[in-house]
Image (cartoon, rainbow, N blue to C red; front, side, top):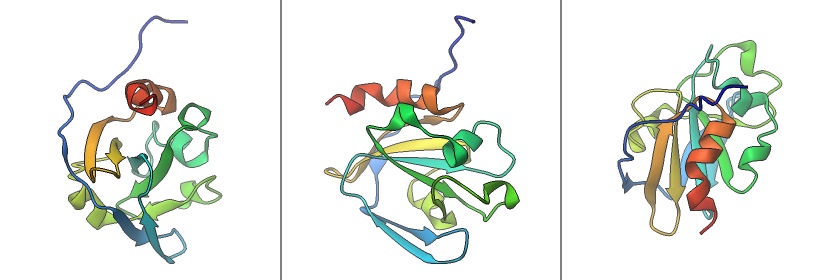
Length: 136
């Protein structure tokens, strides 16, 4: 086991966030998700090594936060049989100022703000980076 731990390096850019997320399911159904609790929006893309666990994994490390998985595109068959809903919402990337996937933003619904963000390497890394916000 290595002592090397990956993490995001850029300072978060606090900014406004919507109170409602809109998009489509992989099957094309309209989705509207109201943000009423601390929400981790995970932006994924097809053929991404760090993204697969967010689609197919258990996410035990992130049990204390609402997790919403979004993509700008429908993707391939790799997301078929997904454990959780993948919201296809290209406009949401612009709305949240997500410049590229894989990336995450943490949204505080009480202030309607992005309060933290970073690049995705895996669920344990993201959980570690947002831990201080979960214990408030």
